[in-house]
Image 1 (cartoon, rainbow, N blue to C red):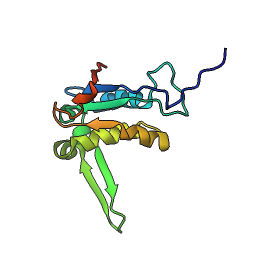
Image 2: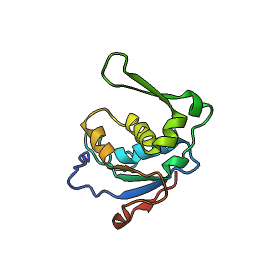
Image 3: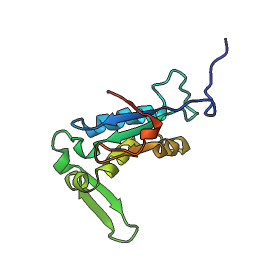
Length: 142
């Protein structure tokens, strides 16, 4: 019996909803990364993008455990001399929780074209409402 190799043209992609309310940011991001990558599927093939679509709702209600809210810092650089910008996660979660969740998921995906394609299938929303009702997403418990 030959080994099965997935083909991205023949895969049927489903939509899933993850509710981040009251759950740790990292655990929600890990669950989303697993589904985006397609590792939950029996026909997973490492060199083929066989993941699903993921909608994360209530990103503003995700929690950070311990003292991460005060101590964890997001750094970025403008590209100019002395252009290092630092924002702690308390301010980041108040101002833009969608970015914090997207950044956490993106860090758990491969750093290649497959990872970039996976991130494009991620939709993150601050509240409970989302725009993908037409796709009939399934609610996923993790």
